[in-house]
Length: 87
Image (tube, rainbow, N blue to C red; front, side, top):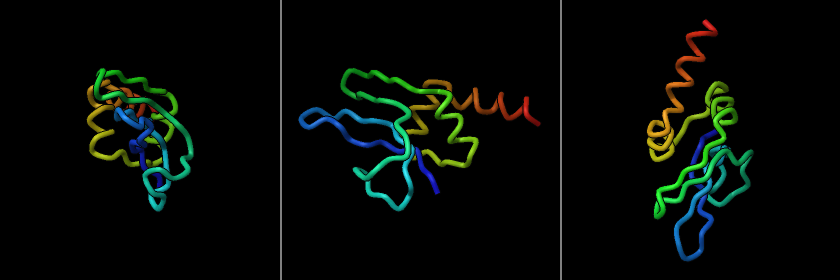
C-alpha cells in the first residue's frame, strides 16, 4: 500500500517533502516519487498536482497532515471533479 506522507529534509529548521512511499518504509526511507514540498515556518507549499492526483486515483492514502495540506490547497476538490467526469 502506498501513502502520501511528509519526509523531513531540513536539519535545523523543519522543512518537509511530500512523497509517495510504501507503508512499510520508515519516514526517511526510499520514496517512490517526490510530489511536493512544505515549509511550515514560512508557510510555503509546492504541490505537483498531476502526480498527487495520479497516486490518489491509484488508491494511495494521505496521512492526516498531508490530507490537511491538500485540503487547504483544494487538490481534493480536483480529485472529486475528475471522478465525477470519469463515471
